[in-house]
Image (cartoon, rainbow, N blue to C red; front, side, top):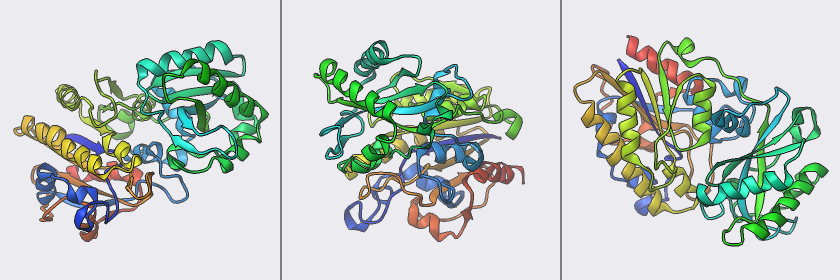
Length: 396
């Protein structure tokens, strides 16, 4: 039996986000997920270990079966793995956003963690220019996708910067920069770099909303066990975001690129479905990740988050069910973490999941949502145990 993980990033939320006191998931039209839930096993899973930040890096590492408490070194190193960067074991890798700030000072505010969802076509030349102007033997800039880029500090894991606690920019939208600027001021190297980069972006990126870099999530290069050797199945990841691709590449999985996959509401849903179907012709485990609900949650836009969930059900879950109707397939549908509209960032709530496969026990729940999943009483306490738990159910 082949296993298909369908992940709607940030899909979970809190009551009151939508009319009638509902969550966005409850308010969405999800006949495919509802039908799978009614005929499958439903519960909740704690993807974020206690004491760790509720990021997509931690949560998706858990869902892929690897314990973040053991393997996680930072957000930056995961995305560096996606790009296949050649790194020294003592290098320090930061995720680097292009952001919009009111001013780069202790009196400033984070206005936009994504510079208006700047496109890759616009952002890549800006980052390459930063490398040409500011890159040296200490710092190197590496362009990524949209607003998500990388900064490498050579041998930085041995320096004080490794211990800096810098907030993810999506956690401080519309909030003061003061705590983080004070943290950054502990490093004269980073302080000077971000201000020089801000000056350069003011000159070169006036046609965009990008006026600063924001380095965060730093850590040593990532190493993960081989997925196939660990779980006995050939796996692939399909995602528009570097962190998921990085996890897959670090674990020796196939990483499938889909043209037009944006990580936004307008992503290439059909391309992701086609890629999953093609891989399952020869592979065993497909991890299909959609970023749209999370981005809408960060924007605080309930209507668009509901629409993102609608599209996930109608244009991913539904077509895959139809195409695979006569095959021996196990479906898992879940999210990595909550991104509640009220918070506009991630929270560590246990996420709802469903597991449905031929001959499995029927849950009989009327719909797939946070409330119904909690109501079953089934809890997978540690996220990295969820994939092994699923494989065990299939072996019964």
